[in-house]
Length: 101
Image 1 (cartoon, helix red, strand yellow):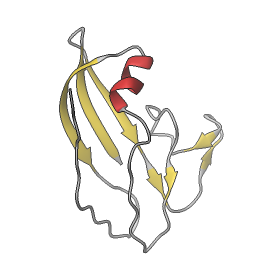
Image 2 (tube, helix red, strand yellow):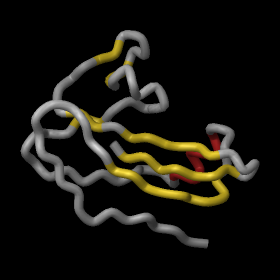
Image 3 (cartoon, helix red, strand yellow):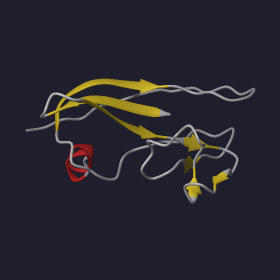
Image 4 (cartoon, one colour):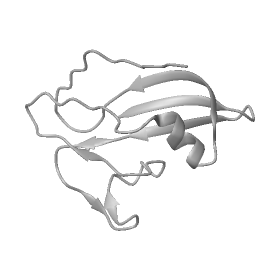
């Protein structure tokens, strides 16, 4: 999982999540592929081939996505990467947050 925590222009703390999976598990309650604990996900999990490196890059400016959701970001607080589940190994390398004015 990738979680970006931010503060919106009203001072409220918000978060954005992106999940990943290697085995399909469609959650019928949401009608999309994600686990029940990931109710915050707007787009569901993204499939990753097991045993292979996978590069994830957002296809849009996340600040625009936050604003469309009604929560314009004022400050990025943190980027958190984490994994959970059964027996597996995960590796992360080369995390970047790109910003420009």
